[in-house]
Length: 293
Image (cartoon, rainbow, N blue to C red; front, side):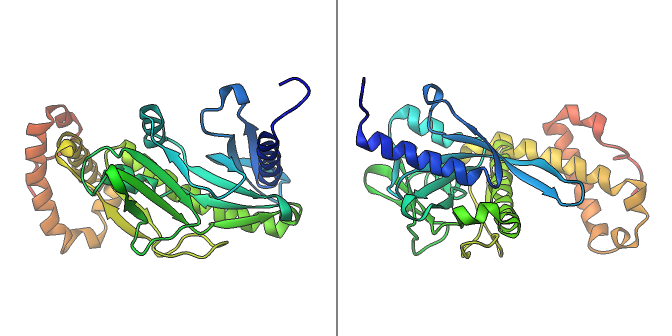
């Protein structure tokens, strides 16, 4: 509006500027133009490098949504649900703390657990998905059913806090980068598995703010709709394992010529014959299947 701007908008703008300032200390950061804003505020590449060659390299890629508070983020319209359910990059929520020139960073890794599990533990599409930064549940992985087939994704405590003074301190930026790199890598692996039809999600049952995730647990999801992709993945994995085991650098090793590999090779040979029936085009990739064991 000419000559004025809503107070709430200005506060939000200042929060975004603070988040951008703090991100710049650890990542190459590109702001999404307001005209193109569809839920992501920044596209980032984590800065990596060492003091020896004086280069700051581009590292893992992730997206950021900046917030001025830790209020829940709700997706309920069909296009909103479709968008949040099909993210192909890790998303970090950065909640600005204007009073202290700092921000809390939250991972959304367990969003996939809700998406793959479906509402009420089934294949029902949730009527809404709510991200709740700062809230921790009593069960892992922090996905709770709400009324009317809604879902609550409990993001838990921050994975790290970044302060103004941190981004001008080399040891602090290295520590922050190490922590974020580990969390982004965790999320990336889960996303790639999901895109490949491997519905396993790894995440930490517990973690400390400011430390990389450790002692990961695994959640597995399946339903009848997965039959085709699971069959395809099995045939591809079996073919790859067979060919790896027959590679000279592997086949000459003593440990693959004794139990349990001997018994496993016989079972794998039988499985591959079934795989050739299910996926005939793989026959050209399976080497030596008819050779004497």
